[in-house]
Image (cartoon, rainbow, N blue to C red):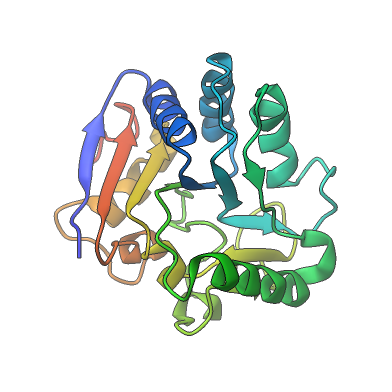
Length: 228
């Protein structure tokens, strides 16, 4: 099980954009996340307009809304990155419009059909919530304890927007070859210290993201790293 490599850099989004471009060009299986910091990384990755035709894009979580809804993680990634590539990857979105249980069941089956019971994602990108949540796995929610499913419905979100969700589970996340957290801002500093500091809080969702056979990199700006 991998310990995190903490990297404090001036422009975390640019660092992540380079990793995305590399994985896209290599034809890898990559998992995208939502949020404002990832959006900037996606925009930077799109500027190179590389050939991503052999790559496959998955999602770590999704809100249970239609794919063109303002709260959709897919819609954000489509606008910031996917629609800007002249050669698009295959995109396998979570179907939030099916509801948390229907959408999760469909995604679980899709992952297993294509990647087996241990999906070895080449690059899995995550954000970190100020409460320490990852994907849509929130502190104290029962979905955090799921060990048999790869995707799970989340009827009750722990943060705004308070919409039902679909999320990859910890077993699915921890199967990745490379996990990268992108974390920016002083508002995340406490969560960073609790998840990745010298004495991690074992109950925190982010502290339970430790790949079984892969690397874990946390890319931070100085404000996010200020309490380490």
